[in-house]
Length: 424
Ligand code: SDX
Image (cartoon, rainbow, N blue to C red; front, side, top):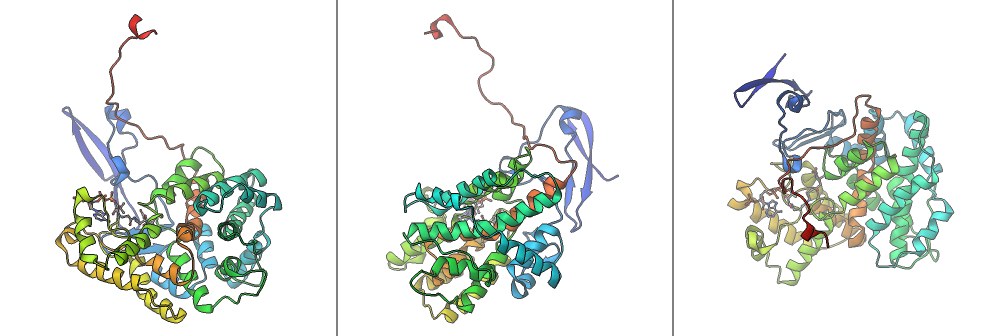
């Protein structure tokens, strides 16, 4: 057996080493504390593997992303998002018959319980749709029973995928004070969402094919990304035995942060600020390099990618095509391209291997589609749903799964007594 030797206080410990299917090497420290009394320390978990997984492979050095072995570029070019949901969750690309059955099952579950519509009455029109989405997804567990059999789980998976799309579109309609538009059985996933977003009772809305195609690609590119912050949250919450809806609601909240999925909204706000400041992108690049400025180049950098995020490459080339197809000119795209160009030539960014990530160009495309800024992270969440579900299912199906419970090193006060003076 391959091992790594650790020497601590003159004692040697042999730690098992294993390799993944893509040659990644791990040192198994699961018995380290029992053997040595010591733990490892890795704030932010940048060097810590939380699980083994068959779902998604990311090679950050080479800029590779594959779902169940398929390259992201192949999947984004030729598949429907519903097929990618099936691939991630059940492990293979569905046959025509399997896909048809899956789509029918999702259509049958696309409505939310009429009582859930009352929840929206409690929100102001200013409520951020991510607050609504996480609350409503968590509340699905109030309507759908706990899971006993695999069939029960599959039914709840389909409910979650189908109803989240409706909840997201309803949250948009709520924010603009328009009546809800119900899902339609004759439309695919992306077209149905866009129809619920933009149709009104006064006139029918024909979804432009270019928009449906663009959304389909965006959803696929966001579908999974191994153990990112929100997926790790879903696994963490699910490891306690919490149900799929509750675990996903926690993941939605984690995604909302500006350092994670919330970055796509922050990128556009940043580009708008630069546009209003004479499009002086060099000024903001300098600010991004100054630690004291508090300014970051949003949409740039990544914990894992130390090369181009392949999704950013695909989105960068898609941006031109989508905007042209929709007949949209956006000065923010020029600013984004100039920022990227100068950053990739700048020593600060080159030394730190900071490249555009998935959030840098996605917002430009959402804008061109007429999707409002506050809905951008909701779009990320809709895309990431199958990934969260697949990862939760993989954890839930693992007989060796244990509740996640990291350790710590205590640095606080040592033992002391309450004195009579303290007893006031
Ligand atoms: C996503 O994990 C995933 O897979 C996430 C995701 C997914 O699909 O789930 O890919 C989606 O969340 C993409 C990331 C979206 N966030 C942003 O675009 C926010 C801006 N980026 C950064 O905040 C940052 O790059 C992170 C949060 C993405 C990564 O942070 P790390 O790995 O903790 O890196 P760090 O903050 O320690 O930065 C290392 C250095 C620092 O400089 P020094 O201390 O070495 O001098 O790089 C600098 C940082 O100051 N740096 C940046 C920067 N990102 C890192 N400097 C300026 N602008 C930036 N954007």
